[in-house]
Image (cartoon, rainbow, N blue to C red; front, side, top):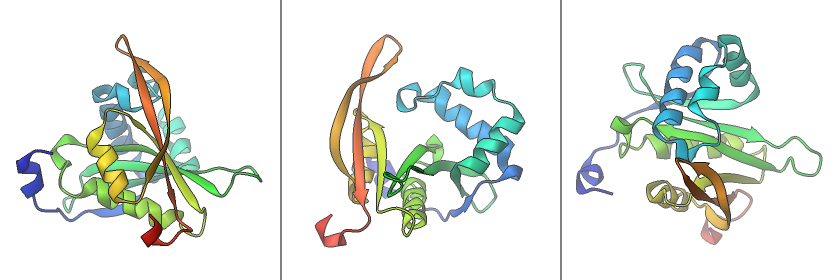
Length: 181
C-alpha cells in the first residue's frame, strides 16, 4: 500500500442493504467494477450490461447486497452475501461482488463493508467463504486482517485477456473464538 493511502483518514460511510430504489446506482458501480477489473469477477461487463432493470431488481431481492454510501449519498462500494440453501450446506455463506471505487480505496470503505457483511452473517451461518484473485494483495491483506484464512487455491480459475488466473479460496469461521483466528 502506498504511503499516501496509509495516511488517508477513514471516511464515514453508512452501510445499508440495496433495494429496488438502488438499481441504477448498483448497475453503474457493478459495471464499473466488472469493466475495470475483469480479473476479479466471474461475470463479464458485457453480460451484465445486457441485464434489464427488472432482472437487476430481482437480483437485489435474491442476494443481500450492501452498499457503502458517503455522507452526500454517493455509492462508494458494494459487496453481497449469499447463504447456501441446501440442508447439508446452509451453515455456509459467501461474500461476493466486493468492489470499492478507486477514489475510496484506503478510506475504510472495504473494511466497513466486510465487517457489516460478517455481522449480518452471524446467526445465519457459522462460516463465510470468499474467492479472491491470487494476485490481489491489498484484498488478501484486508481479508486476513478480518480473520479469513486461505484454505486452497483454484488453479486457472479464470481466463482473462489471454492469461489464466488463479483464485485463492478463503474462509472465516464465525463460531470460533477470535483468539483462534
